[in-house]
Length: 301
Image 1 (tube, rainbow, N blue to C red):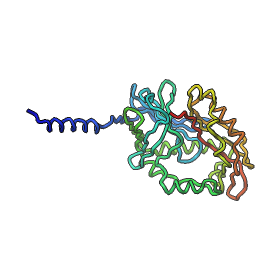
Image 2: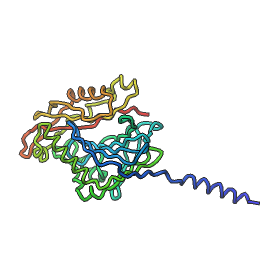
Image 3: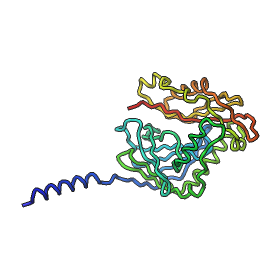
Image 4: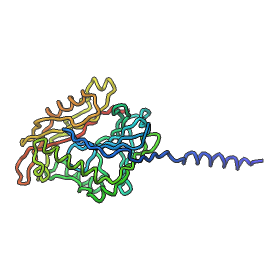
């Protein structure tokens, strides 16, 4: 006859076993080559992983030169309908780089579900020292940007993991990332040239554009009423060309998750409200330059 003590221990161990049960990890190998798209307002590189219903597309967008990437995952299996926004996750370029805690929004890409990461990401998250330097430079006259990661670190990054979003964790075997990122760099240099700006001049500014009262450009009351009433959300990436006096000449929507009402609304606001201390060339002379930013229209859960 089994003693009550043994039965209690058996039940407790069973509960612990269930609690510690590992999440499913889907590791997908590439099923296509990297495909680069030289668009008018952004550069995109994409690759497919896996086959059939479980296939996932990984999409990187860049809107200006630098290490920062907009990241999207798309696939029929990427269901986030049981998640309330913002959708929190963890992303990591492995095996050497640290994890980043991120948020994102759900959407669609053609007939596929998608998860788009809020804002831009690097292969490596900013260190605390880099974060402090960026905060201290806010509103200052000196340009700030973390040092480039470099080809060696990009080559060492061979997979990308996304956790805590779906019912499974996703690991995409990207292969070395230095080739795809170099292709994006060539593309973004062409973008700047296409905007009517001197690439070398923009790379060696003594002062980048400094936004004036940027915290007042957008407020909660700027959420388009029609979109709010309909429960629509969006991530809008826009670019301004700014003249030598610090006033925007033009606004371009580089990408967004739509509907288009958000795009038109963003450009109307920034053309009216955005002002800058102008960019300065290497000799300290005001020059035309560009400013790009991401606006998230998100309904709190």
